[in-house]
Figure 1: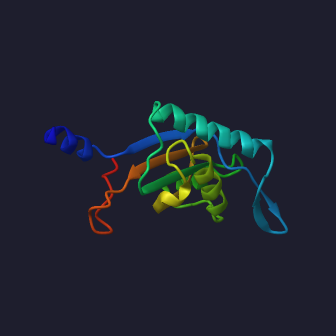
Figure 2: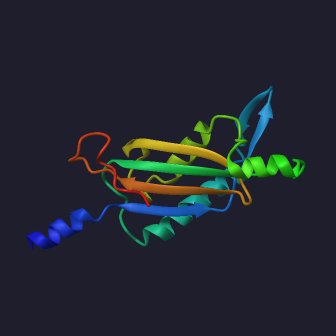
Length: 156
């Protein structure tokens, strides 16, 4: 019995999934704004569906989590080959703050991956240009018994 409990606790909670979409935003008076339209709602539904499929019927995680969100933007077709190569290498990065996306996506995962997005204790968000547009998610359970900074399950 002890061995089974220890083995269960040793397996970290890790969920990985992606959504083949990209954030839709517009420039309004020189500032980026998220579209509050049906596309944003359908993206939220796609995120919930992809997460639910990955969870495979498991209950939402009850403890603290670490969220890793990678946002991949398409490269503009009008860019030169040289600039596209720089973007693929990470030398050219997308501008703008992704906080509105973080909040939208955190809300979308409520009741699916975690009970409430207030369980997120660490969030890492990166934005890059890529060949395809997508949102990559990784949620890792945090081990509360370890000191801060050492309690995250290793993300491969």
